Image 1 (cartoon, rainbow, N blue to C red):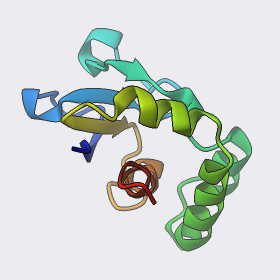
Image 2 (tube, one colour):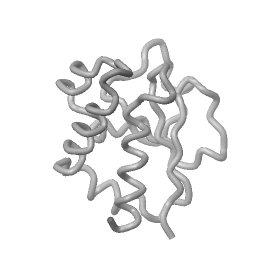
Image 3 (cartoon, rainbow, N blue to C red):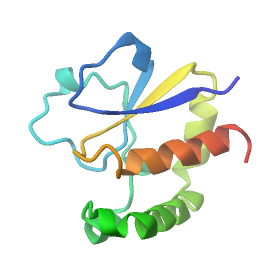
Image 4 (tube, one colour):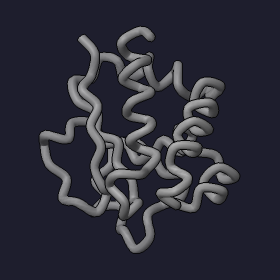
Length: 121
């Protein structure tokens, strides 16, 4: 059984439905105390590289190209196999992120990528 992978803004209230909460930002979310974040793991290595994040700068017009470039990074990211191995037994994993835009953020790309990896593809 593979985990269900969800996404959620780290600023939203944590709930038991979130399961295992993983922060997937390279930088700590602005103005957020560690206790309020209620994360189980901070997986900086799964976040886009600094160069890619700065290039994209959360510009929705660059979203299609960002997705393509980030997926390419993920394909070569050595942290992915370890994450899959370590978390494959979990029922629910929620990828939390700090971005304001809930439709264009790295957690959505990572969610799709990890779901495919957990499915074996």
